Amino acid sequence: MMRKRWYGLIGLLSLLGFVGVFTPERYFLGFFAFAVDFQYFFLRPDEMQEGQILRSAALGFFSGMGVTALAVLAALALGGGRTEALYLGAGLGWGVSVAVYAVSSFWASLREWRHAGP
Image 1 (tube, rainbow, N blue to C red):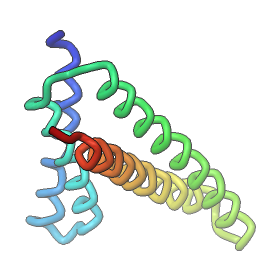
Image 2: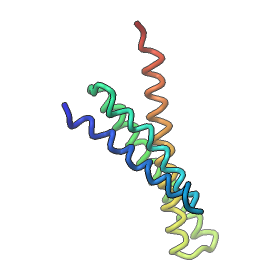
Image 3: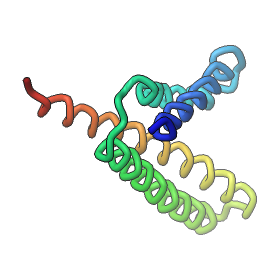
Image 4: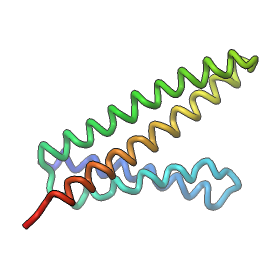
C-alpha cells in the first residue's frame, strides 16, 4: 500500500526548476511541470490511479521518442552536424515528453474530478 505513494517523489524533479530562476539557464523552468506529481503523496492510492499514471507516462515516453527521432532526422537533413542534431533531438524529446506527461496527467485528473459526484 505504501509503495504506491512513491509516485509523489517524481515531484522532486520540479525543484530543478529553481536552477532556471536563479541562473540565466531558463530551460530548467520546464521542470516545474513535475510539481503536479506532489499530489500523489496526499491521495488515497487505488488501481485506477496507478493505471492513469502509467498511461500518462507511456504516452509521454512514446511522444518524446517520436519527437526525438523526427528532430534528429530533420536536423541531419537540413545539414546540421551529428552532435548538434543529437542535442537538439534529445532536448526537444525531453521537453515534449515532460509536457505530454504533465498535460495528460492533469487531463485525466480533471476528468475524474468532474465525473466524481456525491
